[in-house]
Image 1 (tube, one colour):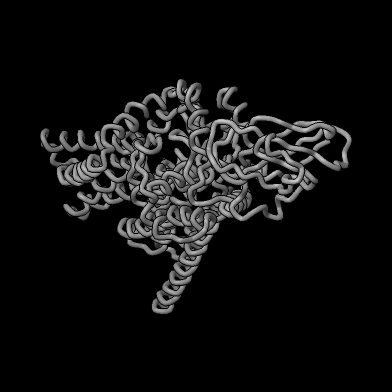
Image 2 (tube, rainbow, N blue to C red):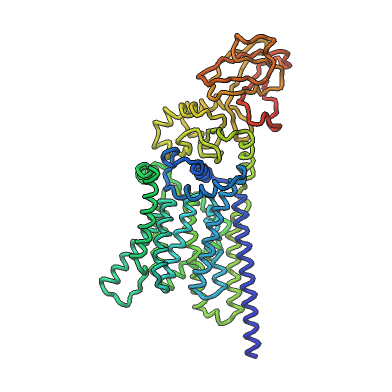
Length: 576
């Protein structure tokens, strides 16, 4: 009878592990799909564009503005450099890079939870619970340095915790190295992880020098950890100095970053948290309850300090957007699963395999409720179409105007291309006096409109409005509008920023010339105007014949496109 019971328990346990493994696989597949379909945020445009610029030999701080550490751009530019895909494929490749970080964290969590619990069921849950917290999952798949830094810092903390039992110098060094990499991904992890490590260092000194023999050591081999951290920082600074980036990097990532944080409009997370809680109230309360239970039951200084420093860090950040909650959600998920394991031990659920299995499977419903929050929020279809259109009509040396790097894989028109509110406040003189000159000198033929453009000074907005014509969606092209009466001719000045062919976007009989002297009716026979030399202004002469409409018309003169005029652009631009 006992043999039969033991065999049934093993079969039940095997079924549980298979179910959890399948759930883990399906969750990872969902995260991949979510990353490939979720819309690209403004910040992702910036990071993607900067990574592309580095892959083309440009340097951050020198060739374009950046106020974050450069490690992510240099690391991922190598991947982008090796990719010969089109704009759409490259954009989705950036999301695949983000996905690879989450896979790395998931694998690390599996080994960590197996080390802590010695159970495959909890190790399988460990691969998905911390990643599945909906408020964090919403942004963790984004291509941004904050998400990468969150992964490295989380794994660093897991290594520190595991090393309290393993007592290995190599693991302590790895913890320090990962913490250093996290900071060089985003400087905000100085206080996310720094506050916790300082408290743990003080506790270690207290244990060592006050000779509290029975007090546990929560930070094994602290000197080795420091050596690992300092080695990363030293190598990064030396590399930046070799590229001539160090002075500007210190100025922009430290002093200007402090100004950036001061002038940035405050955004409290409560402004959008209610949408999350409306859909996940019960499952979120379950996660919080289990996390609090873990902290109270175990009274573990390490995780108490980590949670304390995380909460403090969240409130130190003025702009509390969802991406700032990726790391806190990882920590919440880890503590929740630890609390679940502690509760099962407390209730002796492990003695009854059926009850224990039901307890584990119950967590899948919590995960499902969290994950379902991220579905149907948005998609990137229109953004990918815009990139595809831009690639078809542009050439490799084209530059574009945008306020966030929306073209991603073309060179922006200005040094300050990520025109956020903080940048416009810190560098107010540039945006008021110099940016139009930079736009003009860049010869940018294309502009992508976004909401940030509304924050530019009025005269800058007027310049863009008067010099760029709408093509399709958010895409604009450099050109001229000719307002005229059909019975008259038009003679107006056109500012040429880019020599070449200009197309009269029209389906009527319009004859054009570069100047009135050449306005011979016998010569005006083509809708393409050739302007061979770049100059400040050029007089454009247009004569209208056999027009069908008796009222005033607007005729648009556009910069010629790479492959002529695509079918989706062949629409009459005339407005009565």
